[in-house]
Image 1 (tube, rainbow, N blue to C red):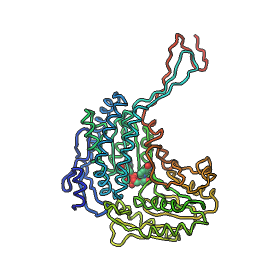
Image 2 (image 1 turned 120 degrees about the vertical axis):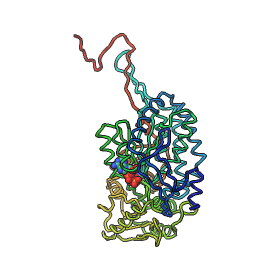
Image 3 (image 1 turned 90 degrees about the vertical axis):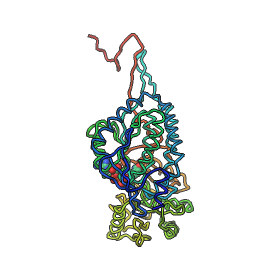
Image 4 (image 1 turned 60 degrees about the vertical axis):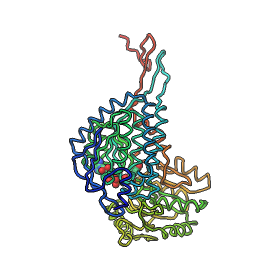
Length: 509
Ligand code: NAD
């Protein structure tokens, strides 16, 4: 369609029937299975992408290792200068890349552009970090001795990413990994190959201009087989995996079984708690965005809503009004708030979730069905299950389905918040500082993201992002996350003319 061609044309991506090479390790290639990029809005095939064959993956891993050996000896601030240039190149294509995210993944335009902005932001962060990758000096108990904790580059980072953030998640990893002096190889979701090709073209252009090996930021598109081979390879020092709990469990075990490093960012099942003193004019729109934004396909989407009994009727009336006014639309259209689900399989999963809720006697307040003749478009749904806890509440349904329960005491709501296996994001709405103290303290939310008067989704890059429990305990982006991307050594140095043992051990023969 002309709609698709104008988005793809702006990034010099030819449309079907051309087959695009989906592997980059300094050169573009691809002779493995053909991946189809399908537009979730229209169902049209946007492109055919040639993925990595096993031999190409093997060769790419070798080149990535060589690229690491080159890159690790470039001073970190100089690496930062290259990241700064990548930041500029991405920012120059912010709108075009954002539109591609909308076209291929299906999220609305402002969120697609926001994802590119997130990559730009984390590049800024990594530029600063490149002058602050500091170790420590520690006082030794032995005279004339000093102990250093030294961060060095780690090696090769493998990034496996999910369909729902086809640009930003790679950005979090690549920027920090480059600052740390590693080479990175990316295995994106098989359903968003064009986003990964467009990003890799921009990044490789900067690398080539600086005479840096392209395999510092390599790309291997493919499905499960390519992912599995990457995870099992001893050439990959650390695997950063973003995806479902089911696949994360397999990846975690595979990496652990060869004693590699692994960082897991898995599913969420995020709750918002609304206290009686909450400002509803802020809380209602925040829950609306949290539950319906990205058509419920964010790891941080609001999936559970706990309302204090006294404000529940008013809150639900206001939320239902917002839901009622939602119209599905083309995510490329600036006025659209609700785009499609990403695949037919996701629509089937939505149907399954509704059937499961109904079978368990839940009351459906709004939604509960696809739009008529609507392709991948489904009605955002609010449901009140018969019980306020139990198995129905414990799974992540990757669709716009919000479950609601009422509570009397904050302690009860916190207990429900913590009662699920996942621990990614959580949000409390209150003006009472005593509630805030409980919420962020030892008896509070057990999630990795614990917000107050801020919704569950839409994190900034400055803090470390990630979740606890079955979300995998990983942390990415800001905060101390960079410390995982380096190899730490404790170096004890003796400047004295004696060689005493620690703890006063005497081993005189
Ligand atoms: P998915 O688990 O199906 O796929 C993720 C990646 O794993 C893909 O690249 C896929 O090709 C690859 N893969 C599949 N099988 C593999 C195997 N056996 N070995 C190695 N790799 C394999 O996830 P998805 O459907 O693309 O994404 C949705 C999920 O991602 C949701 O659960 C969501 O919550 C989660 N997610 C989490 C975060 C976070 O930061 N915590 C962010 C975004 C998405």
